[in-house]
Length: 66
Image 1 (cartoon, rainbow, N blue to C red):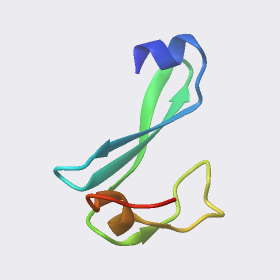
Image 2 (image 1 turned 90 degrees about the vertical axis):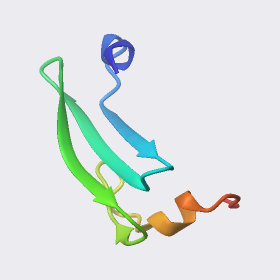
Image 3 (image 1 turned 135 degrees about the vertical axis):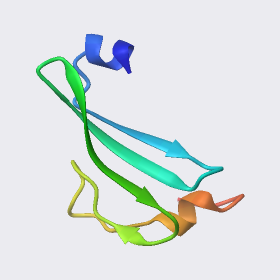
């Protein structure tokens, strides 16, 4: 995450396949702010792509197609 901040990457999503969690973070004033945390297989809209509904269950499958 520190490396991403060095290059001024504005957002980071941290996915844990084992725990089936997604954490959405935003870089503000050189520090990472946790925007939201999701768990399980629900459908979510995550910054900065709020226009797109993401089915988390698809991310946790052993194989998936985009």
